[in-house]
Image (cartoon, rainbow, N blue to C red):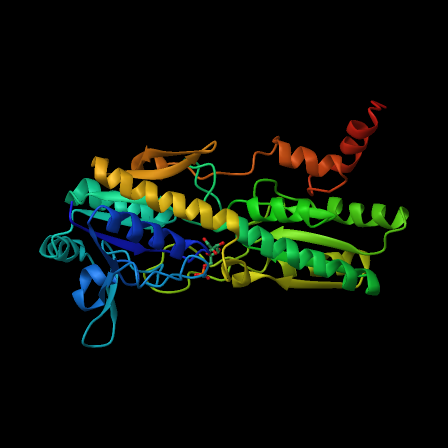
Length: 378
Ligand code: F6P
């Protein structure tokens, strides 16, 4: 092994630069060269977009957000949107060109850092084209089943929690209901962790379709107990019972998934209409993906990067590095992309939330929780 290439694909996450740092430094220690493919596979498609990464170049990047080699979520080489001479966008399979350049550069391994979509592409390259690939899991959503945690998640949760902390005083001053929409796609991890830590009254997650009657009942209950304001955390993928997820359409060409967003405003309007309470909504959005990674995310990202190089040395390709307990491990990419990790509806977080008086929006929940907490069966 002499030369490896690293790419970062999908939405960025704090900690990507720390992975790059660890890959460059631990490869250098073995006498290997590292190249960065800009914007996902763009560098592998067009070698002008390939950059040599030296230890000097990555010296100060561990604490920085974003990715020094750029990222994209519409760059699947098996279905690449390309503009033709008439200015129309056509979808082409350019995976063979990627492989040709990969071989031309003499790469012995591709370290693909990404979420579910990027890891699926990496796996296709491994099985269909024979590319020696190692995956590194990245997503603020923490929705990959095969690893206990992904880097970026802790930073996103810290940002969201800090925002909730700040909202308490203004909500209280105005006796308002503040509805905060957080990211996470189809998983409620960010909402759950930040909501519990940030003192939310109500948390709505995709895993538990909610009932607006229950949400309003909780607000009334708050008032009965002398609390005239409330904080509601809504995951972007949450939906009311018997309704579809609210989204903003497909977004950019070449991107399969819908752009989520709008549920926070919907919930705020419903609360206002049903209770007459003064209500405001805000979307935390990409703030959750920005900024410096927390110490936890940095360390996890550095450990992932070093582990990826170790796997490359062992020749353990078509695998993804993963966290299991406190250990670094690896799982076959085929396994890693199979299942999304959801918040267990009967798990400890949901239980804790209910026991400390947080409403999860489920029908009949308030009464059930009262019984559970007081131990009264009547
Ligand atoms: O997967 C990470 C994520 O931040 C999701 O939580 C969110 O739905 C999506 O990416 C936003 O994507 P974009 O940056 O393309 O708007």
